[in-house]
Image (tube, rainbow, N blue to C red; front, side, top):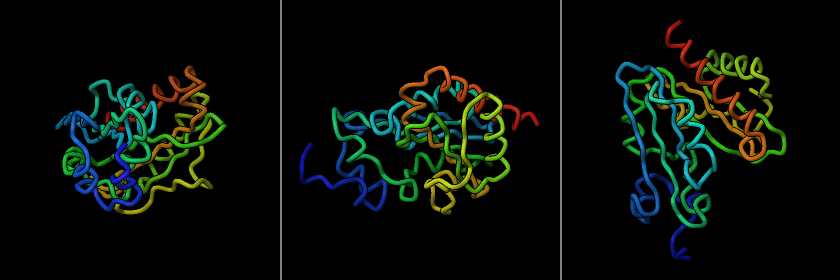
Length: 199
């Protein structure tokens, strides 16, 4: 990687990040807008940035919800160079996808030796529904006391129509070594979101 390119943590916006990289070469964007869905599921650090977050998003959506994925394609250093923090992630394409959605659920990966999902965001009702569903499926969760509260108003999960969403952080352990548990988590999230729409 060109050492002259700045680290993503030093960048201030999506536009600045993409001024250094080429779409469909260094990264790609995948979207689907379902005008009948009030829910969008997004992975702003997909592909090689935070592994398995694209797959988790695909598994949850299955064409049921609007979605957005920003996927790193660098052969190495995708996290280092393409991981734009959620409070600075302002891709206009993503903002268009989530603009009409009452609920936005963002999928992330984080470090952690315990197989669990850390839940944050400003949509406290949906946060608790998702936590309850995950626990019923046998997946350990935490909704407080972790380092990913996801409550900043500029966090991309909170930039939908209502200004509140949910951020789901999947630890390394659940993404990399507990495939069956991860599958249970994906099915639970999908079911909870579907029941939220129908309810």
